[in-house]
Length: 139
Ligand SMILES: C[S@@+](CC[C@H](N)C(=O)[O-])C[C@H]1O[C@@H](n2cnc3c(N)ncnc32)[C@H](O)[C@@H]1O
Image (cartoon, rainbow, N blue to C red; front, top):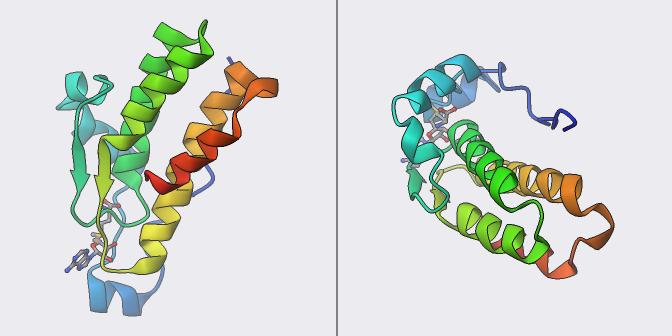
């Protein structure tokens, strides 16, 4: 399967000094995200496990959780579009995030949607349903 791209540089930790000062905004690097999520690996690979990012930023943890869940959805349901859609929607809709900064919340939503869309397109390129655009409003 083609390598799926991530659109946000996961190694960029700070947007501005002001945001660090005002909001404590320092993003977690990818290797730490991975190490922390590995502590609950079983949960990150359970399609319907619920996760809340209480200060989610642009979604470093939530993006990796969704990616891990969708790898499981891909491996079990890629032969059936309807089943893939059903479980992928369950995966996305059990991930929640909150952030005080609107731009972070928006960036996080767009990031999760892109991950969903990229996985969907790999298997169902010509058959993606418009209804799945509604995923944008789940995340
Ligand atoms: C240290 S960053 C962590 C971001 C992300 N969880 C990560 O690990 O990359 C902290 C985040 O908390 C947000 N934040 C700060 N105060 C908050 C509050 N009172 N409620 C919700 N989010 C807040 C900031 O906007 C920032 O995105």
